[in-house]
Image (tube, rainbow, N blue to C red; front, side):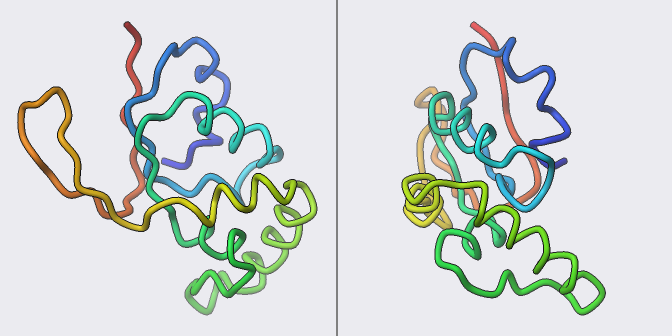
Length: 118
């Protein structure tokens, strides 16, 4: 699930543990999504579209989606500030971490988020 599909319930969440989905190139307001995740997510993994916008390079989409990805990337580049693009570029493509000191695990990019409220 892409984060823009969760946009309406997101403001009710106090804290998001992790986010490893594409933040940009989907939905109407990539700047608001980047700002929300930047403020609330403890762990963020860079997706291929985040990588493309952060580094201004090809998102490596399959052939049927290349033209659409180019259009949405142009929109995201125009909607984001330099600081927001730098944030996307700074995200790790992979991260190993401990959550609640239960176990160590590695998080490659995948299409899921783990939100919770406390």
